[in-house]
Every structure is written in structure tokens, then in C-alpha cells.
Length: 488
Ligand code: CU
Image 1 (cartoon, rainbow, N blue to C red):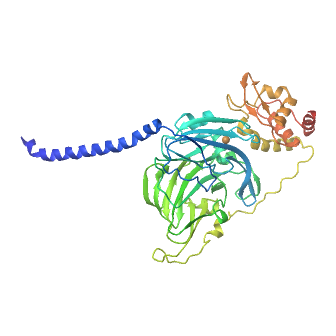
Image 2: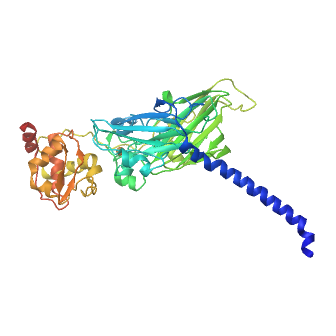
């Protein structure tokens, strides 16, 4: 009987619970079938994707229907500038860091062809986080120099996704610049804005200290230690300042597709002098509003949008602030137009961050110019030079201790194939090698490209390899290399 007096209250509770349940159900059913629908979505016709290098992005998809989208991307290993006087060999998707921007919509069937330029030294592949499938495409796209691979996938989930190379050593391929963004727009497209830009942060690890001049090689130990020499936007110091600065006019809404290639560091992305009106958190569907700094994980992204209200220079930074002012993670967005004193009336001084931001402060360098290698080096000199050649040229495939990668790249340590025939070893370095070989009883069928090294470098790297890891301690001289080079 007592219960009866409580019944109305219980009914209210029940009704409230029912409403909550239905709301939850509705929001679930709103999310789930989207993915399912995308899978079953029919495609009408075929187009070739227009790919862009940063900071440009392709035109919005608008209301176009789902289509077969042909993407052709070429991998290029090329020398570029890290900062004034500092060169670096970048490995790139499409010739830029970050790689070409790919713009698709949900339900598209992407036919992706990855080609590896014949002049490249290494095999590569691509793992797109937008792919539902093994390795994000990595397993289907592993491609040697001079070859191409095609695979297909359907874009099921809208969002902004990172892609990257996933060839061992994965960290090294990413650290050399092999990452980019692929945008999967929702049905009907993202809301239109006035300006769209493509920016990615990345951390770099060089043999020399920050600012040390010359061509800098990748430093594996620093990368393992996560001790970055450079943390930059769009692949280099000043990638987004001076002539490279982004631009907008007062009153415009700016959308930045912001990614982080890593390989190691997360980005506390902030724009000095602005507040993000909207952040598509982690590049997904959730929108946060009125955000000062948003965290971009390594291998993650976000879309940030803001209207610019007053003229001046906005400064893009990783708010882990030494990275901005001392390692390069600093970019600029120049806003022109009329002052609006209702919004801001302080002194406007463009370039306020330039004294620090335009260049990296360094201690005086003790680097000396690389001397021309003499005709014939001593054994100690060859071992020394050989080690550095090995670290730049060979170790990505054959690994730091010459152990190779099982099933893919043969070992050099205690390798019968290597120790049996020194002339053959010289020939392989000079002319490359493809087709099946057997090393220590295991068959390998990979491609080693012809190396562009001097006779002294070839002699040194082979002497280094022969005198390490349990090998035969043979010495190779540049005269021996010269005679093999002239033999054909
Ligand atoms: Cu790669």
C-alpha cells in the first residue's frame, strides 16, 4: 500500500529513463548506420584526385556523389633545406613534407597507386589511417624503387586522417618526412569557410646539433631518445614564415587542417592572438568550441576554425614553447584589413616574434668542412668513414647490427654470401642486386638499388662491414673498387 503513494514519482522516473534511453538509442542509431551506409553506398562515375602540396588543399567536395577516386602518388627521396645552411635528405610522398593532401568523401572507392621513383634508394609503402583494412594499406603497397603498386579501399568514416610510410625501420621513414593527411568529408561536405590551409608538425633528428651546417644525416640514437634537434611546421624551419606565411583578411573564417607526423612528439597547437572558435577534436566528428590550445597526437590530426577579427600577425606554435622559439615550431598567419578598436586597440607591431622566431639560436659551431677523401685511406680511416656511410646508406635495410630484416632484407652479420666473394660484394654495392639469393640457408628476393658512392666510400663501407659482426675481416681498397667498376 505504501508503494502506491510513491507510484507517480516512480512513473516520472520511468518516463525520464525511457526518454533518456530513446535519446541514447537515437544518437547511436544516428552514428552506426552511417558507417554501414558508407559501405553499401553506390558509386557514380570516376574522377582523378587533385593532390596538393602544403599549405594548399584541394577544392571542397561540396555535394558531389560518392565516386571511384583515382589517387596517384609518387615517392621521392630528395635533398631539401632544414634551415639556413642545413640540408637534409627528405623522403617524401609527392615531393613535399608533409606529403600531398588527399581530399575524399565518405563512400568513395579510392584506387590508390603508389609509385617509388627509380632514383630512390629504398622500398616504401603507405599506411593510411582512413583505411579499414590490414595495415591501412601498408601490406598491399610495399614497393621497390622503379615499381608501383595499386590497392583499393572504401572510405567508411568521415574525418581527418594521417597517412605515413610503415616500412622498417618505421620510425626512421616517418622521421625523414614520410607522412601527410587524407581528409574524408561527410556527405554534403564540411561547412564552407573562406580560407583552408594544410599544416603538419614533425620532429627531426640530425647527426649534428641544431643549426650545425652542411648536409645532416638522420641520427637513430637521438630519435630513439626522442631528443629532437628540430620541431617544425611543414618540414622545415620557417616553413610558414616570411614568403611562406599563411594569409587571411579581416572577417574571414580560416580552417587549418592540422596534423602531426611525429614520429615522437605530441603537439600543443596554439595560435598566439586567436581563440579557436571550433575544433574538430582529433579530426573526428566531435566539435569543441572556444579552445585556446588543442593537443594533436603523433599520428593524429585536428581541424581548427577561427574567424579573424583584427589585422596583424598571428603566430602558430607548439606551446611546448622551446620547440617554437628554439627548434622551429613557429609559423605565421598574416591578417590584413581594417582595424577594429572594439576588438583590439593595442599597438600593432608586425614581426614581434621575429628576433627569436626567424632563426634558431645556436652555440658556435665547431663543424669543419668535409675534406675531400684522399686516394687511399688507412684501415682506421676506412672503418671510420665506412661506419658513417653505413649509417646513411645501408642500415635502414640491413639494420644497425647488420642483422637484416627476416624474410625481407638479408643479414650482413656472419653472412656466407658476403664472406664467400669480395668481388661479388663490391659489384652488388656498385651495380645493385635483384632476384633471388640465398644467405645462410635462407632465400631472399628483394631489391637493392645501385648505390651512388665514390670508390673510397664503397671500399670504406665494405671494410667496415667485413670487420664487424663476426665477418671475415677482409679489407677492401678503393683500388679494388676501381678495378671492379672498370671491369664492365
Ligand atoms: Cu618509407
